[in-house]
Length: 425
Image (cartoon, rainbow, N blue to C red; front, side, top):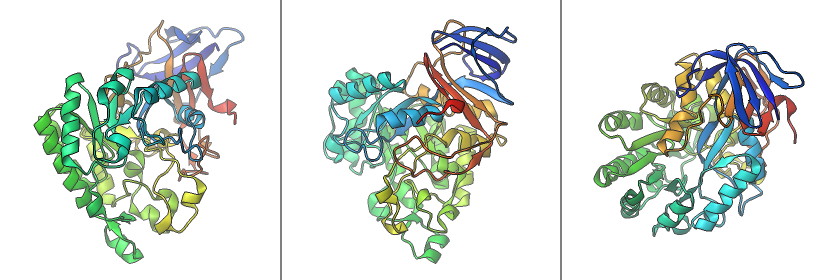
């Protein structure tokens, strides 16, 4: 497909056109020309917008998929469409499938499937065998096959000895370990943030100390091993306070935050709205503000969609019995820009969705330059659109029916092009 992008402001720090408004001509999957003003060729698809921006394709860390084994929740085909609709051209999926992603064959399958679907997939391999948290998996085999990190996803590694062995083992090939800090014994099957609201609603709460205890442990293990650690999906002010100091002293520790925890808080579940029952739980307004400060200051490196599809039977029940999780890959970027786009530098905020997550894992950062393979996300911040229907198999996105001021106009990966105005089921 031949495309002409008219008057888009480029947001890409590795481009000589950064923060310049230009025309872009794309031919045969490559950027043919970039100039402040080009003549529009005949018979070419033209992309325009009222406030159009062009950045490199978004990168999501820890995306959940159901395939293989739970295709009733999500298929890779549906996930690829949902990702592209959200502006993502690259995902790093967690290994929590059935079977668990823990062999080189599993890694090859995901990479090849992504290539066939027009989506770059960099798999995250299992931290422990079968995700049981008992023995380390075959890291080197998975690394050689293409795994970029190792984790048990949102199943926190409770065994400190296991996590230390993982951190020490991956140093041999400069690998990355990802752990979500949450002590399950302290969390004690809580349903929401522990506080006044949980008490008023009669719901068992998850105290912030459940996150803090494991985070402090993980920091000590990181210091001891000297390995690369990603502290995944933080949710509390106390965590940010601790990480501010640690990030100043260490270079190999990175932090992610779910977009919902930046934009929402415990009040969103005041009416027992199961769409906002997620892991980590939505905490207080004070926590939310601390997370935003942590993002602005650079304590938090990347914003994640925390995409966790749940089938209807897992959500259409009373709040205490509903599964935790929300679809997010279609809405993370535009919801965040709508809410925070005027509170911090836009180029910096956008980079938390592509440049920053990619750099953690040493992924090749696509440039927006002439002659380069097109890997782009185009978004318009002045053209409202309604999120009417999800591409995901599961229908558990809390923003269904919401009107966003920011629209993802297109995502382009070579000759694989998603256009919002040409939605196909």
